[in-house]
Length: 293
View 1 (cartoon, rainbow, N blue to C red):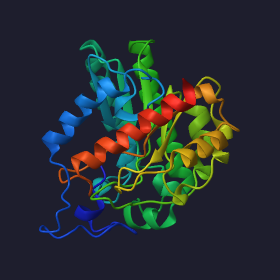
View 2 (cartoon, helix red, strand yellow):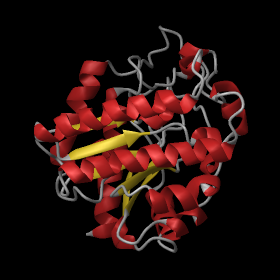
View 3 (cartoon, one colour):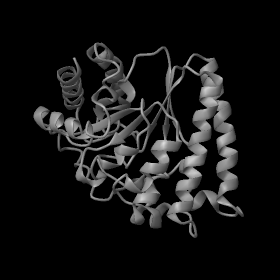
């Protein structure tokens, strides 16, 4: 998996500076953040399909997997003749992992694939990418790998729900990659047969909704319009306006709403308190009820 910006030297581009320990604003502990996800389920269960992300649908078991396709980075391929050798081996292992998870009753598998950031963000590619690989080569390899993981899941259980999230960085409220989905949209959205794409759209760094024109009919798009990085609450009216904009490309009944990412992608979490996290989730649930009920 790719190292986080803080751990890898990539830096949290444009990110917030973590507060001093005595500032009174500390990230939620991991244990409490986990409890919050459980407590949030009754809050969201009235519209489970409409609220995306980790809280999309209460299930006996769910699992987020780091896609093998995210492994195109400099350190991992040192000494290998071809980066594809590593990814091929990792994908085979992950197929086995997916099959075992389904055997254990998992009903939702979410792939978290960062390689696409290297396609639409030249700076990120220069810092984390494999020297000598073009954006087109990275895109082709990532699409092929992710498509095979989805096919493997569907072969094992045609009823499994498979989602994909493209994280743009979420360490201590910082961000890592920017750019429109346009350079990846046609191939990713048409060739990788997930049931749901969970896309970060909380800032202008993600560009507009025009790339959604390539979404296959019947695929749900979860719009990550609510930031998990900052405590300020988004305007419900603005959220509705942006959902209506996206509906010009994907029918409203195939759209959903969520935070752009989780509240604790790393052990220290983002710079929000537990109460601020609850208010964010309540905003998502209330807005979803107003739009779709």
